[in-house]
Amino acid sequence: MIQFLQQMINGLSIGSVYALMAVGYSLVYSIMNFSNFAHGGIIMLGAYFGFFFLTLFNWPFAVAFLGAAICAAALAVLVERVAYKPLRMRNAPFLYFIISAMGASMFIENFVIATIGPTFKTYPAVFSREPFRLGPLFIGRLDTMMFVISAICLAALIYFIDFTKMGKAIQATAFNPRASALMGINTDLIVITVFAIGGFLAGIAGVLFGMKYTVYPQIGFITIKSFIAAVFGGLGSLPGAVIGSVILGILETLISGYFSSQFRDLISFSLLIIILVFRPIGLMGKSTEEKA
Amino acid sequence: MDWFYIKGILILSGINLMAVLGLSLLTGFTGLFSFGHAGFMAIGAYTAATMGIKLGLPLIPSLLIGGLISGVISLFIGKLTLNLKGDYFCIATLGFGEAIRLILDNVQYFGGARGWPGIPLKIDLWNVAIINVVGILILINLINSRHGRNMIAVREEELAAKTIGIDTFKHKMISLFISAVYAGIAGGMVGYYTGFLQPKMFSMNKSTELTIIVIFGGIGSISGSVLGTLLLTALPEILRAFALWRLVAYGAAVIFIMISRPEGLMGGKEITLKGFIRLLNIRKRSGKAAEG
Image (cartoon, rainbow over all chains, first blue to last red; front, side, top):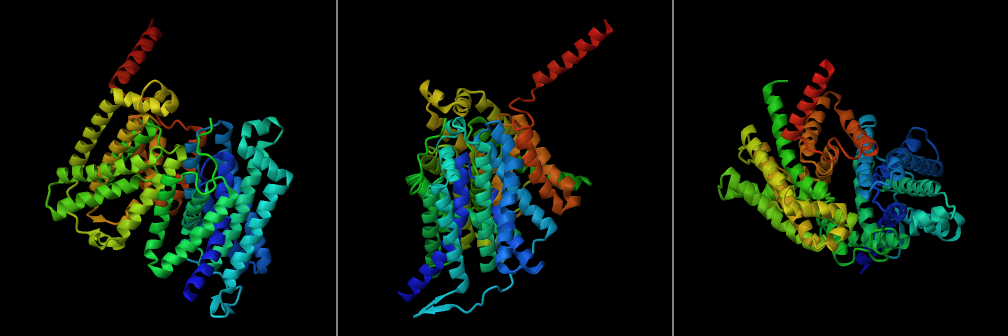
C-alpha cells in the first residue's frame, strides 16, 4: 500500500510535467488542426536555455527559469513564422504542416548537436536532494516543485483561456476560424499567442525535465509521451490534455514500479493505438469530423 | 570516389526506393499519410532474415514471405484504423511503428535491442535493380488500372468518390496492403545487405525520412519518387564532409520545399518515353522555325 502511494506521488509529478507539454500540442491542434511535432524541439531548447542561464551566467534560479520560458516562447513563435505561416497563407492541407514540423524538429535537434554537442549535461543542484517525509512516504523536493509549478501554470492557463478577452478569442478561433475572422478577430495574432503560450509552457517543462533527469539533444523524444497524453485526453481539449497526462504519468510509474521499465514505452504506444481504435476523440475531445 | 563506394550508395538508394515506392502509392496516390512504415520494414526484415537463416530459404522467396507477412499485418492495422479521419490515421501508424520497434527490442530470440548479426550478405546491385524494376512495373500497371484510378479518386475527394459508388475503404485497404508489402521487401533487403539487424534501424526517423522523400519527389508521381530517392540518398553522402551540419541542412531543406514548392520535384507529372520524344520534336520544330 505504501509503495502504491509512493508510486502515485511520483506519477503525479511526472504527469503534471507531461500536462505542461501536452497543452502545447492541444492548443496548437485546436487552432490549426495539426500535430505540431516541432514542440519537442522547443522543450529541448528550453532545457538548454535554463542550463546555460544557471551555469554560464550564474543567474538566480527564478530568473533563469523565466528567462528559459521566454526564450522558448520566442523560438516557438519564430518556428511558426518561418515554417507554418507561409503554409497557412496558402491554406495548405494538414499534411504539409506535419512535414514542415518534422523538418523544423530535425533542424532544431541537429543544430543543437552541431553547436552544443551531443553530450549529456547535468543541471547544478538547485534544491537539496533531501526529501520531505510524510509518515512513511518520501516526497522529493524536486517532485513537489514540479507539481506545484505545473499546477500554477495550468491554472493560470485555464484562467486565461476561460476568463480573458484574448482567451475567448482563442476559443472562438478554435470553434470556427473563418467566422471569427469575419467578426474582427485577428487570426494571425491568435496563432502567435497560441504558439507563445505553448512555447512558454514548453520552456518551463524543459527546465523541470532537465532538472529531474539530464539535458541532451534527443530529450524531445520524451515529448512523444505527452503527445500520447494529448491524444488520450482528446486533441484540442485543454482539460482533456491535463487529465490524460496525469493518468499516463501514473500509469507509467505504476508499470515501471510493478513490472518492468522496458515495457513502459511499449504500453504507452499500445495505449495510443487502443484509444484511437475505440475512442479516437479521446476522453474529452471534440468531434473527429474533418472540417470542410 | 571509387566504384565500390558509388555501388554502395546505389544499393542503398535501391533499398530505400522499394520502401518509397510503396509509400508513394499510399501517400501520393491514395492520400493517406503514414509515420509507421519503418514498422512494416522491420516486420519484413526480421521475417525475411528468419526465413533465410532458420529455414534456409533462398533470397527471393524469403523477401517475398517477409513482404507478405508485413502485408497481412497491415490488413489488421488497416481494418482497425483506416476508418479514422486524416491525421488520426497518421498518429495511429506512428503508434504502430514505435510499438513494433519496442516489441522487437524485447524479443530475445532476435537478439533484442543489441541486434542480430550474422545474416548472410546476398544483396548486390543486380538483384536490387531487378527487384526495383519489377516493383516499378507492377506499380505503374496498378496505377493505370481501374483500382489505381479509384485510389486517385479517394485522394482527390473521398466523399465524392463514395457518392459515385467507389468502395473507398476497400481501396484504401488495398493501397495500404501493397505499400506494406513493398516496405516489407525493402526491410528484408536491408537485412541481407548490411548483414545485421537492430530495432533502432527502424525508428520513427526512418518513417519520416521515407515520407519526406515521397513529398520531395512529388505527390502522385512514380518518376518523382525515383528521382527523389536517388537525390536524397546521395545528398547526405555528398555532404558527408560537413558531417554535423548536413542534417541541419536537410531539415532546413524540408521546410524550404514545403513552403516554396509543396508539389515536389515532379508535381504529379511523370517522365515517360513519349514525353521525351515530344520534347525532342518540339526542339526540332523550333529549330526549323528558326531556320525558316
